[in-house]
Amino acid sequence: MTQTSPPSPPVTGAVSAAPSDAARRPRFGLHRAWAVAGVTFVALVGAAAFASLPGLLIDPLHTEFGWSRGMIGLAVSLNLALYGLTAPFAAALMDRFGMRVVVACALATIALGSGLTVWMTQSWQLVLCWGLLVGLGSGSMALAFAATVTNRWFVAKRGLVTGMLTAGGAAGQLVFLPLLSWITEHHGWRPAAATVSVAALAVVPFVWFLLRDHPADVGLAPYGATQFVPKPVPASGSALRAVKALREASRTGTFWLLAGTFAICGASTNGLVKTHFVPAAHDHGLPVTTAASLLAVIGVFDIAGTVASGWFTDRISPRRLLAIYYGLRGLSLMFLPMLLSDSIHPPMVLFIVFYGLDWVATVPPTIALCREHYGENSAIVFGWVLASHQVGAALVAYLGGVARDALGSYDVVWYTSGALCGIAALMSLVIRRRPVVAVPAVALAG
Image (cartoon, rainbow, N blue to C red; front, side, top):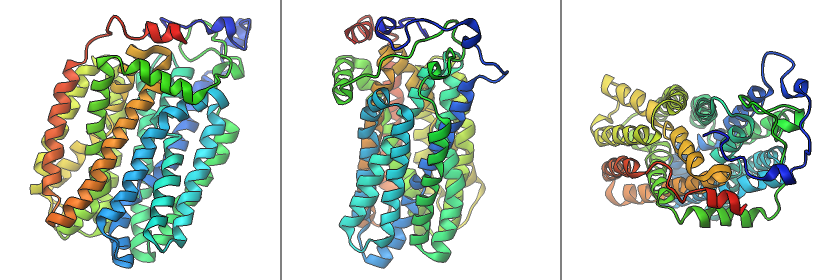
């Protein structure tokens, strides 16, 4: 199913004739696609640096400025929502202007937003910098970026590569959480925000000089392809194309099932655990640095779980994988309120390992289902599915803070999220195998 419907762009493509066999194959043993995947991984790691910060700043900002956790959660909520809503348009912009330009600008925007927070004194500035600027920047290089790289540069091992790139976010969390928590505790939240800004800027040169938009740019066929694939003419009307892809996809039940399950995925990970685990653990007497280190350990197992999930996605039905992932995640969240305490103990370690393996394991099978049903528009459609992921995350990031302010505890939020994961598991099993009407109409319309 990899290249079964290569749409009609060869007629309008920028490259009219295929190069020689020598140009189709890499000169050395390693295909250039792996270098592009490596640069993409580094870029995602840099972007993930900021995603590591919100949970660490809730208590410091509440203490210094007196802002409610709900108010701080609102800024996080806007950030998460924009992260998702920007993704489909960013995927279309990458088709129009190239991945290198879009990703470099996105990293610069993240650096600007996180850097400006150092001078903020009012809550609206937090919403503007942390919510708006960083939300737009991170959304422009969200997982739709990983999907675009995979679709363009790989035909073979797509599931594995998707898992590896998705793990970039986990690696960023792993690298930066302990560092940022130490900086926040010993030097304050402002140096931590500045560190994020510098980290994002540091990745820009790698993206600009090493990332390439398409295998045809360097005279190669995609990894695993049997023939050269011409680079299509840059598409105009990026916003219109993103909306058109949404309109076409929204006519299928599969899209709504994927969007619904991924909204619950975002609610139970970025919105809940990444944002509220540290303050929730601190409520039970666990030091902030220790709680942040536990999140970093989640990042360690997240990398292994996501890469393994990509490998499984190449071999097992993605629908079944999603049902297993969501079901097990829901069970683990139901037990978490009983595990939180002022010290680390074996059941808590078991939760951290288990949740880490499951954290972003849902991404490779979700991308695979988008590819199966929506063909050449799969990256844009996945961008819209990712938007639902972030809307779910945004709601829980905000409502979790409100619940904590109102009830003095996060317990209700943990139980509710666990129940929602059970619903997501059932929804995953309902997704059908390649509906008759799905994507040919979308591909032919393009």
